[in-house]
Amino acid sequence: DYIMSIFPEGFLWGGATAANQCEGAWQADGKGLSTVDVIPYGPDRMPVARGKLRMLAPDDVHSYPAHEAIDMYHRYKEDIALFAEMGFKCYRLSIAWTRILPHGDDDTPNEAGLAFYEQVIDECLRHGIQPLVTICHFDTPIDLIKKYGGWKDRRMIDAYLKFCTAIFTRFAGKVKYWLTFNEINMLLHMPFMGAGILFEEGENETEVKYRAAHYEIVASAKAVQLAHKLMPDCMVGCMLAAGQYYPFTCAPEDVYAAMEADRDNYFFIDAQARGSYPVWAWKRMERAGIRLDCTEEDLAEMRRGTVDFISFSYYSSRCTSADPATVEKYKKPGNAAIMSLKNPHLQASEWGWQIDPIGLRVTMNTLYDRYQKPLFIVENGLGAVDKVEPDGSIHDPYRVDYLRAHIREMGKAIAEDGLPVLGYTMWGPIDIVSASSGEMKKRYGFIYVDKDNDGNGTLERRRKDSFYWYKKVIATNGADL
Ligand code: BG6
Figure 1 (cartoon, helix red, strand yellow):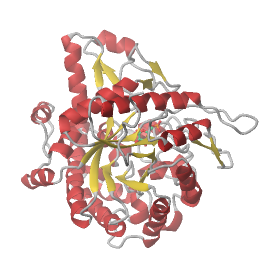
Figure 2: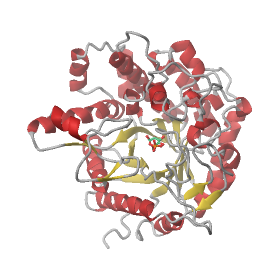
Figure 3: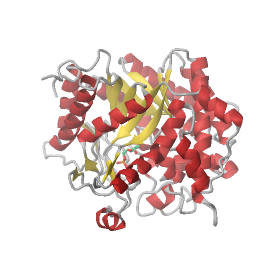
Figure 4: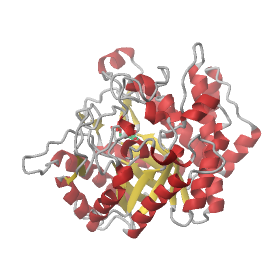
């Protein structure tokens, strides 16, 4: 098969998680509160994540999955050993901001928080696993929301840089790959989860979101420069919730609508990768009456702080139409974070996420054509219901099918299209809390965790069939899929 040995030597196979979805220990060792600690399980989850409900208190009637998650805070050794058993070359984790700066902008970092991540990182390195660190993965410190209204305020940039300084200084020489903001474009869809934004009565919501986006983009550009200064060998990436929009039909109006929908996402990555906002973005903002708080100095920082590589998550392609009747007919029920119509050519997961391996190749090519920077797939996977057999085994061929098909297309993008790709960290190598639904039932892992949606279970870890499959994939550097 031509896929044989097409993955470059040193290709970074692995898995990815986020602090709040796996660590638990939400109040341990001086940790402060962040958004994710007050985003509940249940029907209020999305309204809260979208900034449409008043902020909840962590001790009210709701339950908060981040409080315990899968308790990786206390079990990271066992979990990293399992990653190592699969042969991971890379583990993407995020650092919880409020473990390091409990109030978000403390002058002195919390030593216990730094020590925790140092142990995690050292544990990875002992196993020959490269850590890839997401600086901010959906967690804005609550105290900064109280003080500034989250990323609505420019002063967040300095707070973020304090956090960066603390972790860059401590982990220089140990962590080579960094990402500034997880899925930065999700700020437009889940502004509370993405940026700690709660809307006030009568606020121009679009303007609020774009102003916050600008501050995050400037913060990212400054962080890139700081990282390069403190860690000359490091590489810093942006992170996009990717998935190209297809036009529902070949009607020119649909093609144009798809291009426009993609621009909501490219807005961020154009700024982070090219160092400036695209021309159409200024026109769009003008038409929407958005006044960005953007200074000449900001624009200079953006030019100086472009990222070294483009990382992204990919679960599905997207689809849109300019025709209201088509939109009405094909729109998905429920609470999808990003708008997409049902694509009649695709199957979907039990959560309605459509499955499109070729779309990964399409997305990769578009991103490379646009930016000409190395790509890194830092999330891809299938959330599914797993069943534990009486003998304790877990047969999950659907997960293998999904991943195999996507890895094949990634292989083609490397072998046939010639794209430079640094690595592939699938999402959720161990079952963790779902970001969108807060469930445990939506499982991505090669490793099963005994815990259900209501929080019952022993938290025991078990290898699924896919565990052995991925181990073989890595051992053969992608040749044996
Ligand atoms: C991405 C996020 O949106 O997708 C992750 O970066 C998230 O945090 C992942 O978990 C999968 O989504 P979900 O909602 O199925 O957990």
